[in-house]
Length: 145
Image (cartoon, rainbow, N blue to C red; front, side, top):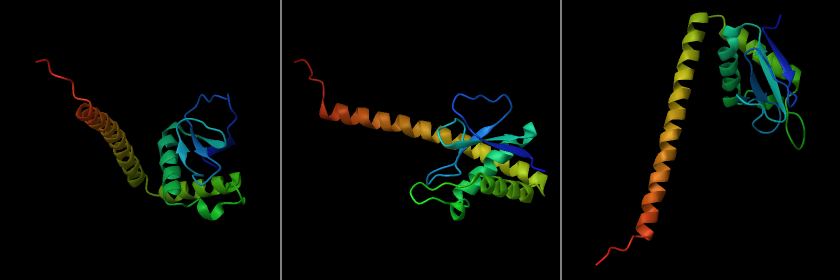
């Protein structure tokens, strides 16, 4: 029995239970997303507490390029819905054998993701400051005599 539902997302559809999206086409096929986009699946876990686990399992599969052997299509690669379901379900069954390690890993991944987002925001502000200093260097204000 599957512990999640995998559906093709249709534009305009909303979901009440916890869910996330996963890109179904292109070279980034398998990438989990918080917001929907064209050509994506939606994963709805049966239990609310499994939502983060499924997200990070999908993220791990995507980052390790586990979906690549399942690519089909000559121009725009995609992975069949059944292959997605099988890969994610097998990975979930494998990692859920040790629930304590799974919850610890998910907590660490969430913490790292939060720190990565903070670092990206700081990096963006540093880029803005850098550009402002360069502009000031090239366009110094004339001092009154």
